[in-house]
Image (cartoon, rainbow, N blue to C red; front, side):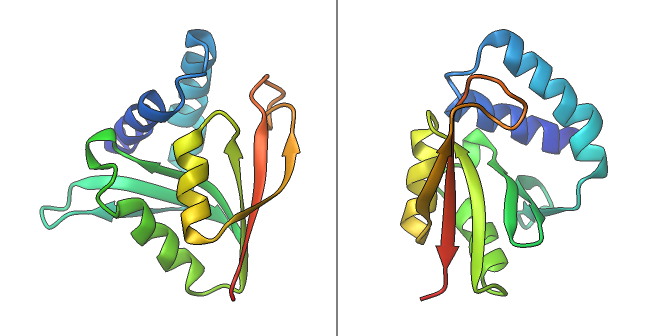
Length: 136
């Protein structure tokens, strides 16, 4: 679990520059103490069994997809997502509006924006883009 928190932390530092330091710390506590210990995750590991990314889902929704900053751009996220999508006809995800690389990643795989929220799911001032993917 410590490696998964390290993955989360490095990924957020690389992509979520818009978070205030206080929100980053507060969210980190929730991720480390509540989310990671209880979430059913799919973890991408290398040949030495070192985790490089993880994905958490609920039914047809991507709840979390984080790739260690050192592993970004190497296909780890695409592998996790394509594996998830292979068994579905549609899927959804929410992406922070300010996370341009995250939004572009999902768009490249075929997700389209279907809506927007002014705040994140905890009411913080970080707008979310609601996205949906449908099998063509």
